[in-house]
Image 1 (cartoon, rainbow over the protein chains, first blue to last red):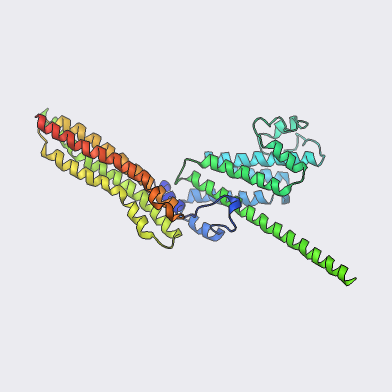
Image 2: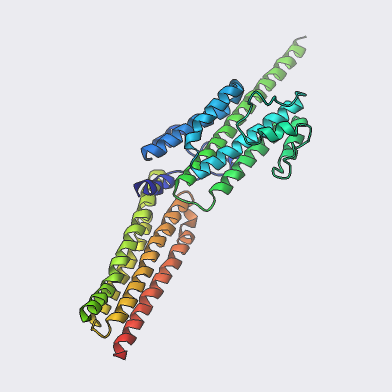
Length: 227
Length: 150
């Protein structure tokens, strides 16, 4: 009973999260969010801590080997009994796997070898077996594979990131709609918060790149003037 | 046998009050917890959140009125009717209190960041209150016909 009741206070204490591309700053910062999450019972707090580790790892995929990524995902398995969590993480793993396969094929690499595991997703074998198909014969289930592939081929990275964030955001909304004041709602909130933070950090990275380009332009102009 | 019938009658008499109290307790607790959470996130308007969290307390008031009305009509021949009316009115009041608590908690949650929807967000809670009023009024009407018929 107390585990249920704490969510009324906790969820009401969290600010509303607008859609990720409509905010210019985080509605609640990491420290304050962590403070609010201290209301949770120890078992739920442990679950949330594992999710935080997973999300950090998820963001640093490029710095990990496939084996490290799989090992990290396996650590999450004992906590995957929560249906909403299993559905959200399962979707993210499917998305990451399909993106990795599309990027790999875009670079001209062959299909991953079946003897060395490269993904924990249930789609890995399907992708290996249908490597030559434009959508790995998954287009009927995942209609977004074609637009993602087109953006990847066109190297429209910003549009591709936006499409991926949209997919994740809409999926979270779908999985957590119709529930209030429960763990599922909190999980949805945390995943959406992570999307916003990710998007905002991307924006700042884009600003840094743009700033570097402007500096470069100005420097070049000065060089021309100087000559 | 008559003692059993009278016991059922007393069960019916106290049911609206007891079940209404259960509904109000759960409803007010849930809405109150949501209000406490909203206090952390808002700078002003705290009073209205606490006020809304007290909305499910009306069910116990209806329960007390029905209980007192039923008590005055309790005889061996009216006891079965009082049992049925009291128990069903109590269940209706309890459900209304619990679910009004949900509505109030949701109203508090959505209006904490958007003060302009505070009024409209209370509409679902008011509708639930309306059903409690139906149960209350028609319980009184039926008690009247029960007493009049005997």
